[in-house]
Length: 315
Length: 315
Image 1 (cartoon, each protein chain N blue to C red):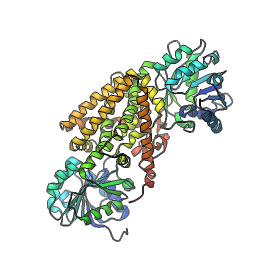
Image 2: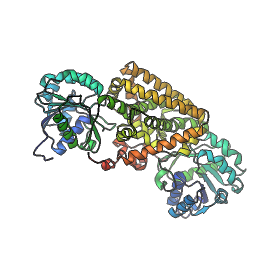
Image 3: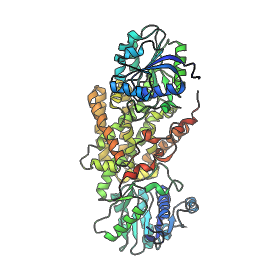
Image 4: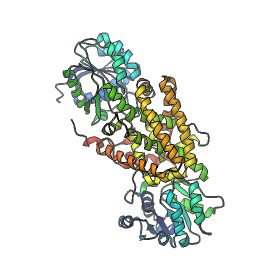
């Protein structure tokens, strides 16, 4: 893709946090747009985004940012998507593509759909990428490289629009998959939403004990606990909205998880070592598959830099 | 510590996997022993350990390896500690220190205690270090650097022996803490055993679904799931033994976890966003404390090398 012929003349980013910022950086890296307009509610965030340079212009209203844009990307928490769409509705130009980056998709169709003017192509999207950081300084151009981005177009969406949005995400470094929104929500309930819920829960449990102090939990976290704290440090607003908006699928997966956990509990209580050994052997193979699929590093301990421990003073 | 005056004349490693191997490497690095004798049940493991060079001599029986040793370290799964102790009992010399590296400690006192000859100093130990790898090739000298090692001596243990074992672990790079075995088992039930159980469980649940395929789980694992697969790839024998030997503490922590999870489930079902938001905000601070304590990296995504994704082919 040549920098002299951008895919889109004008792109609007509504929301300038980790994802909005990373899209801005990726657009600049590949020259995907003639102009990137940005909106965030906070004046400080807008100023910081301009200063970092991942947007070309900052706007005080979402509608103003979306005006004349060929591609509008809603990068706000799922609960704010409906209000954002309502606000920009009058500003959207005919032929524009409207998309989002929310982690749930059926609720997005429900909340954004009513505010899509005729002639505007609404294609829900979900880049499978992120870190536990948030805010305009958290973004970087490589976030989407070799990650998946899922589009969940409603039936009847123009093929040309899907093609253009696919090219956009490929330009950002992603591989693109298309699936139904309902299936998306079920898949991500198990691979993303339940893992986050479990992580939040165990961190809550571990810091609520009487017989074990919080300082002991922190001091000995390297023995397993710390792996959960990364997910449990993710953005609270974003994740509250995910659980409120993918309730059915999350409750279904949570029900299965709890059933399985009750069976493990019973095996421990009754000393059924074979049942434990069989499960622990089976799960080991799954990590190998994930590494082989290029979805995680094969370095022990995630390749954590051992030097992080240097600040611990010797007793 | 000078290489010309080793802490111990002869050290015996009973078990030559990740931990035994790493101890051997650390002993060599710091010159902590005049001679390192090793035993493993498998002939291949013994040969490999000699070839790598983290032991000086390999022995076909644990008793032979322990003969004349000043320090004997049992590096076998918790379930094998009793039989190993029984086997080496006649070979232990007066004044020797006997220790282990098991993840539970009350059961070790119960299982090993009966086989400790009078005049031998038995001090249970637990280095808080490891990776998801196992076997003689998995070890490395830096594994214990700036990690904690916990000793749980029974009342009446000679102070000089505790001091010598403390110096040994410090020589391996560790910081040493002393606590009661019962308290140890409660602390590690929450910071280590429950996290592993939850990780094994969710990986099992995720690979047992009808509506979501295993290939989808693997493909989109980067959205959260993959973080759990590392712990769930840990050694099955070791972890079976941990759960069978720390039953009460694990069941207590599991009960609390399940209660808390039921409350979260209810909040999701009834749309209680404030409850979710409050928990998610509180848990975020815990990660910060762990990073400040030098127990994890502050690099986003654990500092995973982004290049691991390069093997994914573009569609």
